[in-house]
Length: 382
Image: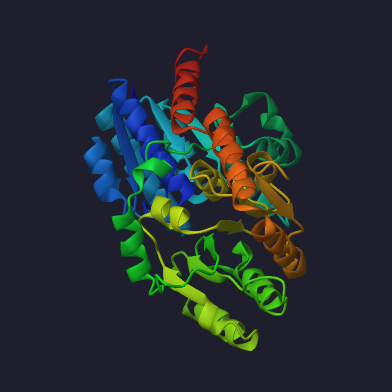
């Protein structure tokens, strides 16, 4: 089986990580794993797995580039005898679909986001993600969204949640040397015993960094709560204005000395091991909630926004807590409640979180389910 995955870039992110995980599974089964992409920081990992990068400007939305990418993909499909093209983003998915139409290769998509449409034209643009012979939804929430937005695709949808690498995200595997390295990189005082909150997400407004800083401001005013430290770990992706806005907000909330904006973190298991609570307060629904699942695997309770895929990952009151989106007061109250728990009670929440992730969201399950979809497509009547 020769599978060509198409994704704009290979930088940090859930879709990018899943691309590598599926490449690994295809190779382990004796197939070849090609990835058409502009590349990025995960290129070396792909190569180490045995995957092959087909470099092209797959991140471009320029119609001329889409057309040229279609011809590049046609040439690749024919020269490499590709069986399946698996598209993971809208713009390159159009190029991929046109290429499959011209070559007879099978076309599979993963619907990675909500892709909200405010016009008929945008809905048509989004619809390519529902036009695969099989359409993978990474949560029940996304399956329902597809049914609403693209009812023609309902029978072709297969729900496959994103996976967590339980070997990488293993609390026992993170040693003190890795924790010390992060403390130093983040300029955290090892003598500071105040609680540590982690918000791991790229720096963009809908991920809830503003709300987290405002919640921290409220916690500072609560005499019954020891004011935590807040680490915002994520790539700014060139949004320096937003970084400056967050810094100014921390100053106005009088918590500038308690907020660290640390950029991209390459050792997320250690980051989660270092913290007391993980926050995922996204203002818009997450398609799945990979960060929340990874935190659970690391025995960390999560406080998540109560919408989207997070409702499947974070079981309220059992493996963490969910709060109203965009509500700093609710977020602050949830943090205060979690920190007020006895250590053994908070540890029990983390233990339940890891058990939930192991049962429902492993990488092994993601890989096996995706391979089943590939074989289903290959064996379906033409």
